[in-house]
Length: 318
Ligand code: AMP
Ligand code: MG
Image 1 (cartoon, protein in one colour):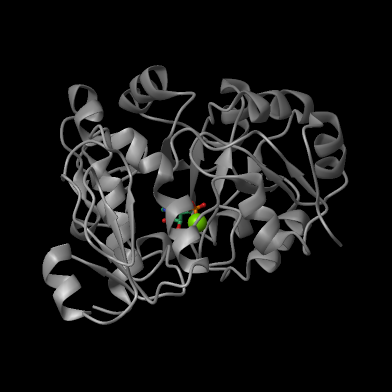
Image 2 (cartoon, protein in one colour; image 1 turned 180 degrees about the horizontal axis):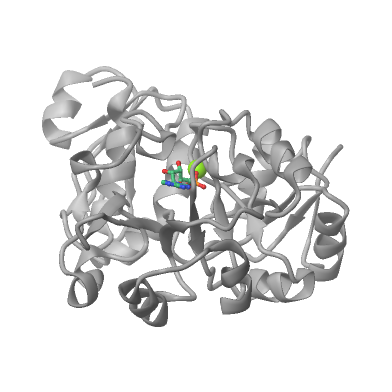
């Protein structure tokens, strides 16, 4: 199999209807989608990604009607969050309906759901009529794809079709929240919606370390990682430590002396930096550099999601 790349929503919908998996564009990263109500298709997603079965998938819905087919009920604050942030990069973990396969949720009685904002995938969800279970379209543990070409590079031989929606506008995965028994909210993953934006509606969510039944791979210390070693910290110090090696620096706004330096946003825009992050990690991974040195980004807004991904990318080594 060698994936065709195209913009044909109806073709993608036909394949999904017949139980195939198809790569789809979202505003966060590209997803590897299957009919959420077809366990055989969902199983295929795990196989294509080499994803362990204990890592649950996010279900993507096009409207409230599809949401009601997936989720049993949701608290008033969840409704307020959906009103404010959907469609958009916010995932909520809510009680699942029995029709949702245990494979999607890894046996949990909760399901992670979101309504994506990308117009192509919104159109696709309208045409299929069923929700799509979709993790990021990359081999398990690797950097998520933000263009159709990224998907083709790694999974092109394993899937029939990549629905091309151009480069992803947000560039990091969704923020994941779960309601807690005490009425508060837990942050399972920082992402495309900042904590500052959530705060007026639900206050400050507690960090994932404070709760949660199990550690899921999206929360593992080492994940979202390129093959080259990544070190995070003061890049001047790190550059001294790796003197004589071909170092690549990932910096927020300014150039640093190195074999190669990638500035993610010269104007200091964290949204722009997030949008470029994964493409730059991939480029550096494919480049002749030996070591990737990443600056710590400001810990606010999308900077939290950037630091989270860089920390995990570096976790295997530091
Ligand atoms: P992704 O790999 O971007 O598709 O994100 C999937 C991640 O969503 C998982 O690794 C979990 O961290 C989280 N997730 C999905 N379903 C659930 C669930 N039922 N409960 C808690 N977290 C979930
Ligand atoms: Mg992923």
